[in-house]
Figure 1 (cartoon, rainbow, N blue to C red):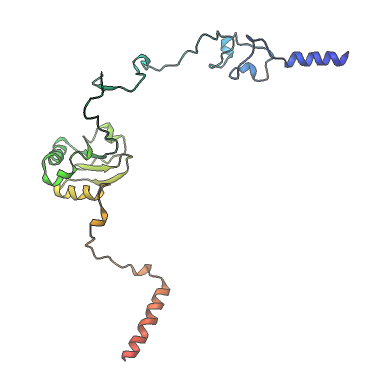
Figure 2 (figure 1 turned 135 degrees about the vertical axis):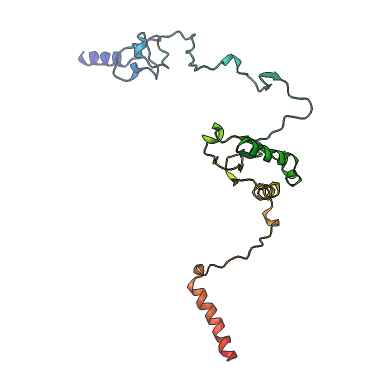
Length: 226
């Protein structure tokens, strides 16, 4: 009889509660401390707990100011907030792969570079190849994002990832800018550019065995001539 009573007590303690009393995994009632469900006391429950709630009632969605009714269910195109259809002819170009050309300076400095980009023959090959933006030095897009802004002007060429390919802190005309952009551009073929400089030999980098080998080759020639 004692064994039967102990078995009955064990089954009573371990048996699952009713459908309306069973705790979900988010509820603190299922932490092993409580012996019954307290889900009718909302302040004791986890915000995601569904215990004691009508199964037909969805959880209240947290919203921090987003007008969810204005979010399109499918991809749409807008112009100044007005939804338009995809043009029937030429599709909207994808410029995500273009290099970024950023000009930072006062209005006169920026205007000079922009006018050369639009009209100078030296820069004709770069038109429509870059995403061009210009900012005054105190604009948040450059002053708060790590750009150097003290140039006259400062000109950046960057990959879409943000990696800087070229930077200059003054502007000395379209020809010099074209040379720099050509070398920094990702379409620039470095193999076609000869290096006209005379490479300097760093003697400190030559290993000692190389000196011994050269001496062993030259000394016999020297004594032979003597």
